[in-house]
Structures are given as structure tokens and as C-alpha cells.
Image 1: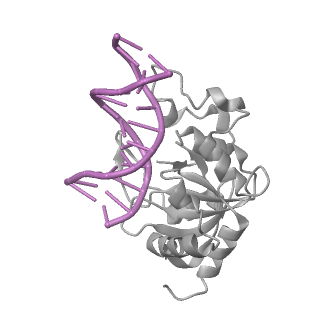
Image 2: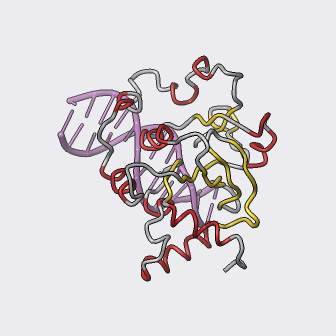
Length: 194
DNA sequence: GCCAACGTTGGC
DNA sequence: GCCAACGTTGGC
């Protein structure tokens, strides 16, 4: 349940801990490895396939439909992002430490797909660039089902989506993409739905 | 709304 | 450090 929230006018540090801070009893495991030198095994393999140590392309999940979580609506669609001042929002609410490490690895201006999750039609809706700013809608919505079909085919054929994190690192809300994955998915918007 | 799969917590 | 209980994710 990654959550985009309005940027608080240059007070990023001032922002409350948010949902990530709500487990008060214990130290959040995500904080300790702020200086992690060693990624988890799963993360390692995810990074390995990205060539150098860190990816330049990303996929970020967000929920486009209303859902209350502890009384707070987590809805944040790509249309909501578009409606923000400067079409930019601050990404927070990521509790999973792996996802947070990926967040830290992101650099300003890098490109990411905006994925709609936990909704009627899950899939990739648009392009954003990190910090997180709306870039454009995809020419057509690319449904999860279609991505999965390609993933299945590519597993057999060795195609670009054979290791796509969406299917291999389940439930990771912020995930890296290789350039090949990114380019392949972008090329899909020119094609008829399959 | 259901529930499988996965993650986290915390007692022991 | 184990692992049962609990919480979350997210497709269907």
C-alpha cells in the first residue's frame, strides 16, 4: 500500500512519519538498514539482472480505487497525480524495507511506470518520472493480464519479460525494471491488445 | 468480499 | 532463533 501524498511545501523532513511510523512498540526494521550495504538475496537477484548495481527504470504501484485503511483513504490514481500541483506528489507509506531500499536507489528524473493495483482492472496506466511527477498516460492501458501473457511466453522463449519483478517479486510495491523490460512494455502501447 | 501468499511481530 | 498468530497485499 504505497501511498502518494501531497508534497508539503519543502518540508519533507517535517512530514509526520505517517503509516510507516505507526507500529510504535518496536523499532521499524526498515530504519535500521538505512545504511544497508548488503541487499537481501531476492533483492540481489533483482538487481543483478539490471546490469550494473542499480536500475534506472521502475514500476510503482498505487491504488486507484477508494479503500479505507485505518480510516484513511489510500486511493491515489494517476489522475490524482495529474491533479496535484506541478503534477507532482511525494511517495510515502512504503513499509516494506526492500521497496524502501529501491525508493532510495531512485534518482531524480528516472522513468517509472505507474501501475494501478488492487482494482477492477490492474495494469500500467502511465509514465511518471521520479520524484514523482506525471509524464504522460500510456497510449493505451496495459492490463496485468496482458503483461502476464507475455511473461509466460517469455519464460519459455527467453524474451524480455521472463524475469519481470511484477511476477517474480510478489507484492513489491516499488520495483526495478531492466531497460529491456521497460522498452518492451513501452512498445506494447503501439500494438493492439493481445 | 474472499482468500492465498507473503510479511511482521513478539513470546518463548 | 523458532514459529504461531496476526496483518497486509492484491488478484480474482
